[in-house]
Length: 195
Image (cartoon, rainbow, N blue to C red; front, side, top):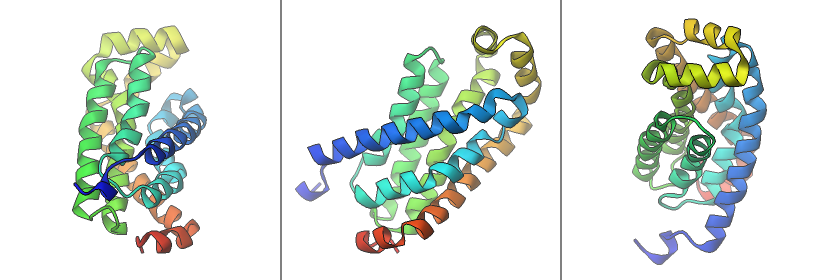
């Protein structure tokens, strides 16, 4: 790896700044999940809303592992706040795939960055997958945080067939968000050679 492709302090600072912005927006969009049925569309909406943020980040930091680091910090924070290992393991798998997609486009291809963001955006599905993979623990956590009615409503909604739709929605929301980001940030993409 050439020295211009290595992450520098400036890149790490940008990762930190974009992570904070991403997390704040993610938390704000996550408020729609206060109604259980809307929790299923949360990943789609998140991708549409955060596409501009993450695509701008990818235009500014076109280096290996930058997207992986940005992407893994939110699942890591959620894990440290009491979510199960599912969120973290799922996040690692998703971010490795997203990073490989970016690499396939040499970090400059809009097409590969768009696909990478579509995959990146599915990381949040790991939160819902807890209901299927470690149900008792997730139900207990949900009951404690949101109450019995909410948790039972979520339990009825989160099924394998519904999760397939949630993953599809998350990916498509990410793709839509990438295109919205491209339209809004056209000059940044041209400067970065990502047109």
